[in-house]
Length: 254
Ligand SMILES: C[S@@+](CC[C@H](N)C(=O)[O-])C[C@H]1O[C@@H](n2cnc3c(N)ncnc32)[C@H](O)[C@@H]1O
View 1 (spheres, helix red, strand yellow):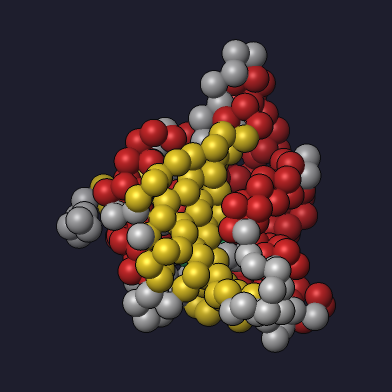
View 2 (cartoon, rainbow, N blue to C red):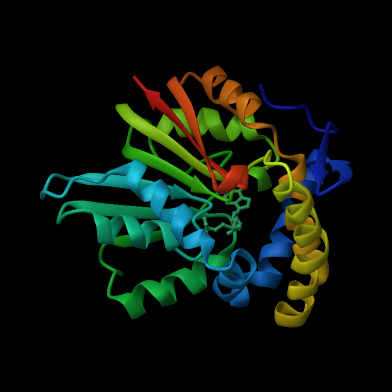
């Protein structure tokens, strides 16, 4: 159930009123939009590409002309949508939905450059109140997006609502590193190298500090799986990648 107005949320490590979190998140993505794709490569050493491919493999769009409609929420500059279109057949189409017009603007430009403007559409919208009818999509993806949403349980209920019975929810998100040695290295990298890169390349250390802190506040993989179940999804599972730096959670609307 939605938290009442006045309830708390976290913006990174800071406790903020829940209704303020989205404004703060929007400022972060306004600030990073232009350098977003370059920063992804720099910060993850290119690993985000492999993680996104793992998500696309799970989406498994049909290779045939069979119509297949993907909704990529918090889709930003279109990375997941483009990859699913590349992997799928003639009938595969994608809608990128994001709350930030600046991220969508960069995404639209990239779609035109890649010749995907007919297959991919860009819609401004909030994960908590999706502007789409019930049971209208064959798959829902959200990559590095759900931890930014103030009311995760509301976003999950919306995901369930727009999915057709028999279709799948898939979430790629930073998770919890539990490999001895890697955890200390990852901490150092996250709290020192990432903000420094943010300052040097995007001239915004604070935005990248928020991104790192929000990763640490996100629920552990089992707890997040439980939230997905609570939204009504069945056969919920998750797969940890790269020592737990990220996880892919999956659930079916049956
Ligand atoms: C880290 S980016 C991820 C972009 C893309 N999915 C990717 O993997 O490259 C997070 C995105 O979430 C979007 N976002 C934040 N809050 C949102 C909300 N409530 N509804 C929809 N999108 C949201 C931001 O605008 C931003 O584009």
